[in-house]
Structures are given as structure tokens and as C-alpha cells.
Length: 77
Image 1: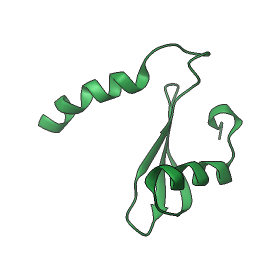
Image 2: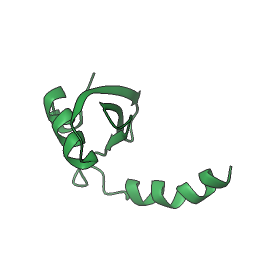
Image 3: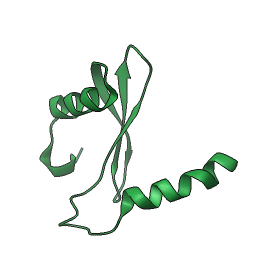
């Protein structure tokens, strides 16, 4: 699987642990696409998701902003 920015499995788990605030033991890839990389983390507190976006130097589109603007619509559905 192609990893975002050449990041390895251990780094994905470390970043996910730091962001979730709890230790993650594994990162399972959920979606392979051109827009981002989505992982399901395994933690004692439940399965948070972790999304990696391509560097803005490679693609300047505001992908996070687009997803955040879409959340209210998804929530209503």
C-alpha cells in the first residue's frame, strides 16, 4: 500500500496515539483513494479514525476544510 509521505506503519500508530490521546496498537487502512488515506486505529477507548492528506505543496486544495463543511449535511442524513 502506498503510504502518505513515505510514513511507515509505526509512525502512523505513533501519530494516531498522540492525536487520540491514548495508545494505539494498530492502524488498519480503510480506504485507498487519491484524496487521502484513512485508517482505523485500535485503542482501548474505541476505534478512532485517522486521515492523512497529501502535503499542500503537492496539492493546494483545502481538503480538510471541504470535509468539515460537509459534516453538517452528513449529520442531517
